[in-house]
Image (cartoon, rainbow, N blue to C red; front, side, top):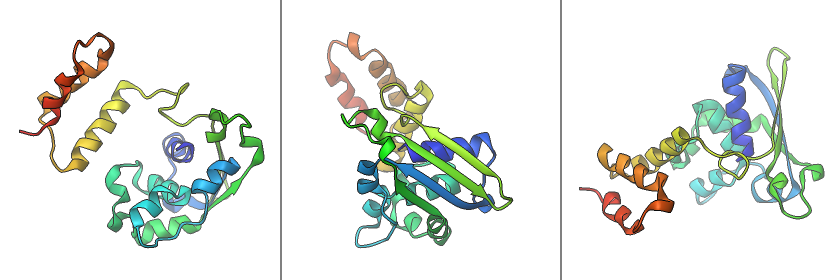
Length: 187
């Protein structure tokens, strides 16, 4: 999500911490706003509520300096510190970010962070990480793979991860992708 990328970039570039933030204003396309821009509310399914909330995703990334799968489990979602941060995060629709043809610009986001000291920080993300035109690095792919494996509760042996990466990194040359299946099974 472009908004998660924006807050993570600001935490790195400006050494931004949750206690520094007075307010976060985010603008996204009307289409994105309709899907994930509504005020955050925990209802019957906290995981899904968080996954479909820009406010939660931004507050989580700011507070935890990352966005991992376990951050969407109920105890993380209901963390009062995150709930407080969501109250200072305001999302609105900006028609200028809408791509009439449904292209990538509909996924763009503008973020303005006002600090308690009165500083104003801006970040524009044209395309979220992992989308065409903004590919993930090999290290980012590896981090995502490890997060998925760890979240599964059945970690793969390190050797399997290396073999999996070796096959995936040369997928076009691989004779039989079925060779991946036994590597994904835990011993």
